[in-house]
Amino acid sequence: HDHALDVAKPGVKYMDVHFSVCRLMTDRLKELGLMKGDTEEAVAAGAHAMFLPHGLGHMMGMDVHDMESLDQINVGFDEETRPRLDQFGTNCLRMGRRLEEGFVVTDEPGIYFIPALIDDWKASGHCAEFLNFDKIEAYKDFGGIRIEDDILITKDGCRFLGEHRIPYHPKDVEEFMAQNK
Ligand SMILES: [Mn+2]
Image (tube, rainbow, N blue to C red; front, side, top):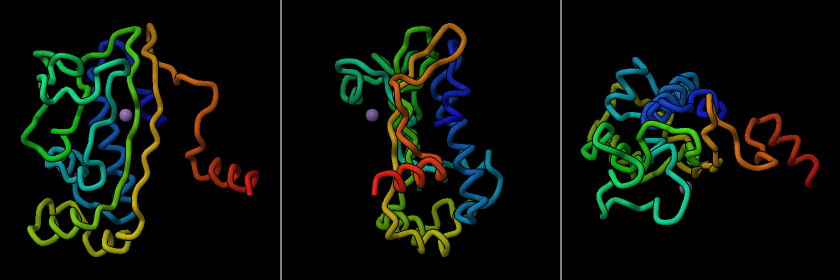
């Protein structure tokens, strides 16, 4: 979330914000021992999609979310930024075009541990060079987390929409839990 707010600004493709977040996530998952190998190569291969099988966000407004059946370039993409529909994860990216001042987009990275997907990729060896399946196994009962923020693209950056952010840094979550027993 913090990284997306740092990177999103007019002129930047939201697809690039998405992949920048994917690389950061891959780095952190490597620190936890769940992923391995070269970060750029892992993201190019789509290995991160084991955990984040969807896009970073989508435009906000009426009729902007599920545009797959109406041709995706009508809202979240244009001729310059057609999504790669052949790669798992990237086929669920709903917004990739260059950001413009006044755009309102969601910022909703997630991390999930999906038992069926873990079993499937483990059995087929898909992206095995980037995934530590033995460690991932231990997270099978974890479920997943996704928080959706909404951001406004401003003249030279972006800002979070709303007065209060949901706590998501560990310290803030623990503080919140302690105050709301
Ligand atoms: Mn959403």
